[in-house]
Length: 318
Image (cartoon, rainbow, N blue to C red; front, side):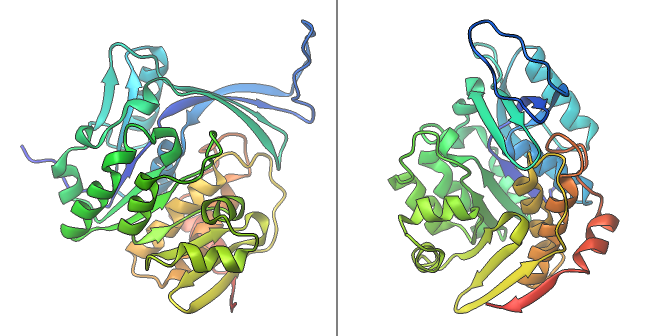
């Protein structure tokens, strides 16, 4: 039986988040106990959050990732399946633990501690060719976490997907090693249609001192660029044309996964045939609404809510 085609295939990280919330979540060493507002186990990993957010927006979504054969891995598979995400391409490693993240969140800011486990074992060989051949769009998240495993083959996966008629996008996320460059990264950027960093990541990826300089460097390969600017919206760059997209500000309960939900909204808009700025407005709406509750997916919106908020966006030439 052939695998059904997917609107979106997401490649990358899949792990639970242990989310700690409160006004003061900074640990005190010396065996001191501190009370916080809440601790919860939720869907984590940028790729997994993007997949769930896209499914909430009505896309058919498949995830390619790696987890361990343990309760944490089963938790992720069960949660993703319940959200309608196809997890057949999530590899289960018998000899590795599932990756885990502890996220300390105080509303608009957070600190993140991650043990990679099986996350960093996903390779291009683990991604079924049939999955790429049936996709309308292929998105990769958290490349720096999978630099040694998926990194060498990601450009090839993008090239194969594009040859089959799909579009592609890349969100590298933060580089814990602080290197921000490699031949694998350069090849992946050169093979993608759309690069999706936030502002801090754009500056580091480009080695630039200003956003204008970063834009020039990051679009040199011909890729379109959307830079996420947090509460200030997004900057869209399509060749020589630039637009700023913004929404009325919201007061976040927790910003975990907001950028990943933005990615899902943007991709959903593009697959609907929207121009890049209007798709970015849908991304801004999905990201903003996702901050209403703790965790990356708890308040990820459905299509109706996201479209309603996106209609209030301001889109101006930049």
